[in-house]
Amino acid sequence: MSTTPSPIDAVGPEQRAERLTAIGLMCLALICFATLDATVKYLSASIPVLQIIFCRFATHFTLTVALTPRREVPTIWRSKRWAMQILRGLLMLATTTFNFIAVSYLQLAETMAIFFATPFVVALLAGPLLGERIGPRRFAAVLVGFLGVLVVLRPGLDGLPWQAVYSVMAMLTYAGYAITTRILAPTQTAATTQFYAAGIGTIAYLPFIYAVWQTPQTWFLAFLLVLIGFIGGLGHQFMILAHRRAPAPILAPFIYTQIIWMVALGYLIFGDVPGLWTIVGAGVVIMSGLYLLARERQVKFTRQRLR
Image (cartoon, rainbow, N blue to C red; front, top):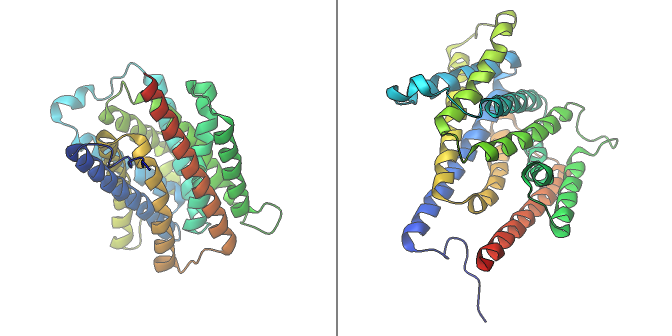
């Protein structure tokens, strides 16, 4: 009986090492994002969410410009697809705003369980926007995935508080962000894309920051306000480096490891223990997502063999 090699074993030693490095970078990115959400939740108890969002983008923007080679700074803003870059930046801004509001009310594991529905929305949008149609099996996986989200939310059944709608909105806008990223990735540099994403968020909130600004009461809170931009930028950089070393289908399943860090940080920092329905719903979403990714990988493999 022949067995199909795993995506890591199906390549040579050098590529295998590159893919393992990419997986490690992807996991580091997800740890950064989980830490970012936990820090935001901690800060939201004493700092206005609007101020937290502004500091996240402003620090990210400063780091992007500072780390860009000096000879490239004058041209970092140039893009032949500036309208798409602005749209992507606005979608990232909306995602960050909705998500930061959500984590200030919900457990970290609850927001992550809802956020895991993003691949299903992307799969549905990829047809009309990217011409990537999905078959009946993958469409069934999408429906089951949304069922898992409903298990977490339990609308009308004394489930999560109404603020969970912010997490749903974050998931929907992030799906649009992912689509625009896929459109821009082949032609835009990472520095330009980060410049627009961080810059738009900074500019959008700059007119309002004076009205809500509260000076942090301790140096530790001030440090955390700066840290969230660094963590967010570092996480995005890890993810970019990971995708340069391995195909997206290899890395995508590891996105679900973020729930581990969210649950751990939620328990250690806030004493939150996920409820039974959150665990069950997250499990349904994860299994459906893994099936969706497996089908996507199988379809791509079949197409490559037919060429």
